[in-house]
Image (tube, rainbow, N blue to C red):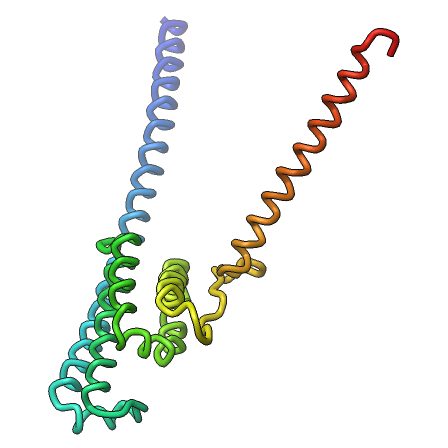
Length: 219
């Protein structure tokens, strides 16, 4: 009897250890789920706050457009010839805000964004707007990788619309040393690629010639 009881207790101990390990795994998974849920809630709360601030900014600009002589001086001087040009500048800023928010959340993909910007820069207002507004847009947008990509896309479409004349943009990097993006780095990559291909071809031809000489009789 004592031997059987000891064996039963041993089996119960094994079962308890097995369920204990499973319980620990389930607890860890549950804790991970709670942490992920809290992280998502924090991100959602931040996104809602950003959206609220942007909505408030849009309301302020709309008020400014409704009564330009009253509200425009509150924002500071805008060096444009008349009220029509000032309204066009402010409205173009709203269009750019719409493009940025759509691109940021993914409802405006890059091909559609480029098409929209190309149409804007074919006019007279957007090419005048972007050199004046780029500094403030860089200060507010370049803090994220997607923001830097957006600035780069706008710069490229602006450059395509004005191939002759002063270039207003500077290289936009992703925040790491040596990662400036623009025509110069792309051209450098192309040159390096061509040079590498030529070098590989020369090495391959030399090895082939050496093998051919080695295989000849009397070599």
